[in-house]
Amino acid sequence: MRDKYIKEAQEVVADANVLINEVSRRVKQLRRGSRPLVESLEKLSPEDIALREIIERKVRYELPTSVWVRFFVLVLLFSCYDKAQQLPAAMLFFISSSLFFHILVTNGCETA
Image (cartoon, rainbow, N blue to C red; front, top):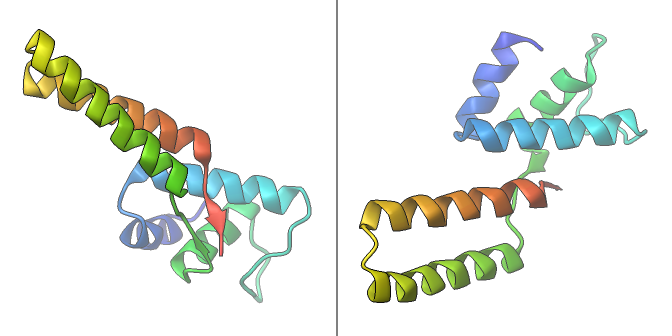
């Protein structure tokens, strides 16, 4: 992968974990025969094509509504648990964000 493409893609997708997931999902699609959404005069690897597609906003990441619903239900459940057990706020935040990241990773990205 070209460093230039990585830096430009990081300006579009700030979270490195989301960027990695988005690129790997798109690379799998390209290797299975999907057509590139960007044109190039030079021969690019599937990774570079995926990065260019992100840079040019041809591929985007979107959380499905069900993911948001699950996240807010988890936060609600943990906040109810917190009232009963008096968990520190930092612990509540860590548990909620860890579960949300797990949901995010398992759902992947959507192509535009």
